[in-house]
Length: 236
Image (cartoon, rainbow, N blue to C red; front, side, top):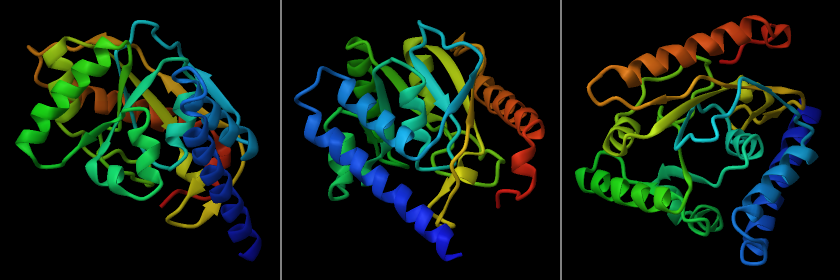
């Protein structure tokens, strides 16, 4: 137990150091290299290779990603060369130190359960898209370590429908098994990331977000069933 806590603490220190590097190099490196550099720094020092399945769409304008762990952002940043504009809850932008990590690259703040915030979300997404960035969202709206994805929030669909975006779902498999602040647990090892087929958002289909949820859950379950290391201890 003590050794497990030490491993977790080591990973936390690496993540904190990586974020510090991003802040200190942000104005020294061309965008988005400070973000990419810090993500690779973290991945390298926590010994987490990534097996990428499927093909990233070079024309994707929005990524939808399931969310289990604090390392999800770092993993995604290192498996694409795109300049990602993350949508995150507004409270994170006011957290000391971490707020800089999301404010410097001009990520997008979302105030939950606010109609005015949705208008602001659409406006800010338009700005980031005009600058060639890819809107990147955890559509569940929060982390869940169970492996069963929560229903997707409507914000992603509103933005994608508004701008007729090309959307690509990305499934990260069992990242909470590798790093969990909730359990204070860290296990090095290869993570599987799956690019699903991209599609153009169709506002005439009111169910496309739910269908995407089901497709991502199916891909997750299928991948998990073929990765025996995760069967020894189910994520809970």
